[in-house]
Amino acid sequence: MGCPSFVIIGKNLTFSITTHDPDTGVLTDADSAPTYRIYEDETATAILNGSMAILDTSNTTGFYTELIACTVANGFEFGKSYTIYIEATVDSDKGGISYAFTAIAGGVISGSLAGSSSFTTTAQVIIDEAEAILQDTSNVRWTAAYHLAGVNDACKVICQFKPDAYIVSGSMVCVEGMIQTLPADGFKLQDVVCNMGTDGSTEGNSIQLIDRKKMDAMNPGWPSVTASATTEYFMSDERYPRQFLVYPKQPSSSQGYLQLLYSAAPAEIAAGATILIPDIYRPAILQYVLYYAYAKDLDVPGSAEKAKAYYSAFLNAIGVMQDVEKREDPRDN
Image (tube, rainbow, N blue to C red; front, side):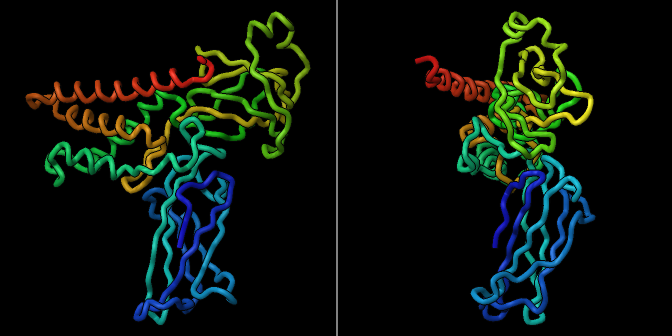
């Protein structure tokens, strides 16, 4: 049985189950095809539903799979959580299982484009650790939901300090002209990788970063050069992290797509979901959750001091990582 934890918008997702005789536990084909329903967050109306098909009947028993297209047309949205509810009847007894996954943009979410092995910590692990430190495992003073809000808030704050903690890779269609803007979820451009044609899926020439002053000196008339859907250079400015300039400018119709890498704020997750920034930030997240807890009770004697101390520890944890990164940067050697 299985289902991926993440799916890229526009890609397919395959999930599977195995069915068993409820009395013996032996693998057994279902009485009829298992059915599934897919829900977004806690919305009661399913966005997709259907039946699963048995796979490789000659070599398997009770093995059913289904492939769905996770497209915008099918109702999927970036950053949203989805639950697949599956029912199967075996020997007249009905059973069920559910899976959860998150829809992401483009092809990558990462800290410095790290592999999936960098993401193993769930929000619940952080919550359990915080409750133990706070000596409130029964949630008398703080609810688990409040701690979960602290975890989600911590991830967003970390991304403000460390924009590379959560990077999205995606294909974006340009607008007419030279000024382009990141998708709504992005807050800082990291790179413009290559052209993606006018259909968003055809990889083309790479795109070079060039300094605006150098472009002005080389070709003062560059803003008026004939428009093209194929970009050769891009220019960015730290003062405007969500905007960038392209050369040549884009035409008034049939604009080109670009493959981007950009920093985004991670979507909020449920307690059982894996945190969307790398495990290296786990200590910092815990310190923030402890700060978040005491910040709720600033009128209680001693809480303000504890909140300040934990927030300082949170900042120090990030600062230590920043110093390590600087020492290990090969460009400094």
